[in-house]
Length: 429
Ligand SMILES: *Cc1c(COP(=O)(O)O)cnc(C)c1O
Image (cartoon, rainbow, N blue to C red; front, side, top):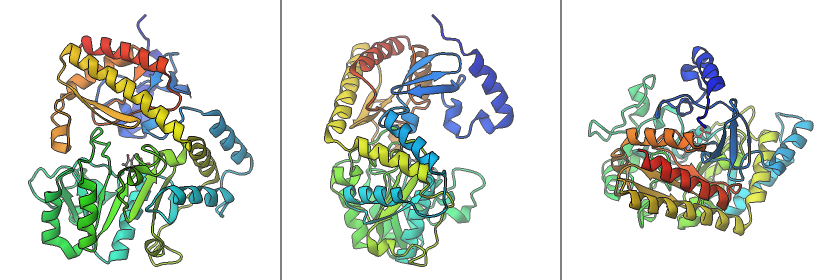
């Protein structure tokens, strides 16, 4: 039976008149893959249901946050209870202390934390903090790493072969990004070159310790260790943007996983349990720069919001059993191994990068190790694949350059169903 999208189409048409692209965040519009985005009516566990009554096995997990699955009963109940006690106080509450304690306990690089309302705010504030602490202006970021939409971080492709950042969006003055230096992911010599030239002017190196916004790209052996070394040698700070990897790779994020401790850590997504939350943290010495103790200003009307803290705390508490991460990894490995077999069998030019409960199927091979090799993907093929897969009721991310996220709600039965659908969708390309 062919799926109907009558109501989604009607809503999409109305939405396009009211919002740019009909959406409140660009990738949702399916621009990268074509077609009409399914308007979701409800979601439970591993499944989403659209307004036309179609059901999907969901592998977006809201772009990462929903590691327990959709509308987890304990998380929903915690939010309800919190809401009945008031939606916002503009004053501190107990759950802020409880969740801070939990984060500090598990993240080696965090002794103190400040909550924000988004990942963008977390990285923006993390960079400001590094600049304030070092008294330096330059930052180094990597091609293909995404850190939210703050002006000076919206720099990706050094197409002009220049090391100075070129804004990848109009509306960002050139002068806002000329303190952003670009390096190549997994290429320590590109970082060494920048330090040679700007060494005592670089405040920080910021990166996703496992890149997940050019598709999943893993750090090669010693890449993170070498970044730790070179920043230390030059008096610069190392910032891990763990908005995705935090609580995804384990309770201590990528820093625990790889045994490399950054100076500043940025969190988001899972830490909010599906509500709008971000956070940045570091050692006491660094965090004491932040107002009101220190001179670096940072604030938020809804920061540490009681509903968001309740959702985050319940999510982290429930997640915090080592068996859970093992279960997530086993599920993901089964899916990835099955998919690898299919690729081989159908002789498709594709590859997979995967770590713990996230992965990307790239329509290129060998698997990408940086932005340039990620861009070799056949995005048209991905679009067709995405459409085929959606037609069977499986929701992968609507872009080649995003990650598939599994949740604790996915079952082996879902994985089997998904592998059948993947086979069909890839065979029909
Ligand atoms: C999603 C994301 C952000 C931005 O978080 P928002 O909550 O969307 O502002 C920052 N860094 C990384 C690595 C992300 O994946």
